[in-house]
Image (cartoon, rainbow, N blue to C red; front, side):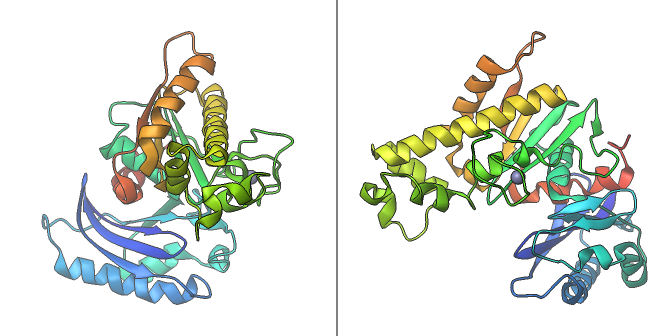
Length: 314
Ligand SMILES: [Zn+2]
């Protein structure tokens, strides 16, 4: 089966032509500096048409367009339900009608975390598992859950996808979502510079000399023996571990797939998370496996076929 796919993130969109578990061709559209989604739509249409014109792979016509969006999505009406200071015109747009008028294809959409899980389940690290949580550690923290082969969506399409907003510290930092002490507020790339600067020892730490602070640099300085970096590393690992245990208790998975940019330091993170979940999750049936995502930035695109086929729908 062939399909078109769009993965729309904060700064760019990737458009792709997909056949089963293979991305045949892709093109990237920058969305930096655009006022909303409306001016991006013609660029997306142009990209998708160019992909179709190239048409590598079999002669089959694409079955539809799978749209992965970096915000809350109404998975019944296939509309954007909520945004976070980017593409704020999204909820007012009828993308199903746009796709029909522009490409004469049906459109289905879901949020990016769920699409990434669907891709990893269909073509990556979660193949062969039907009870899976995926968590993406990056700028923010995304999450999605699959139970017994069905993607968890819930009445308002929000179930399972707010894993990064699982509170882990009620004395913690106020999160952009309105809650207190969310994992995303306590250990994500967007929160990290503020967390480091508020550490009482920051001025004497090697981190103070960094123009920008990332987890890669944090793990580097921790490895060099910097005390402040070590403390923040240790705390971040425990934040993620606590969130994973909460997700295990909520969704009863057999596998946790961890992805996202922070996993450049997977060799430091995965063994800790596996050991933390082994020690602290209550799973008398056995151990939950924690593994690295395999598909990187292609995961959401490779969720296109199961999304369009409805393979993991309730
Ligand atoms: Zn939050």
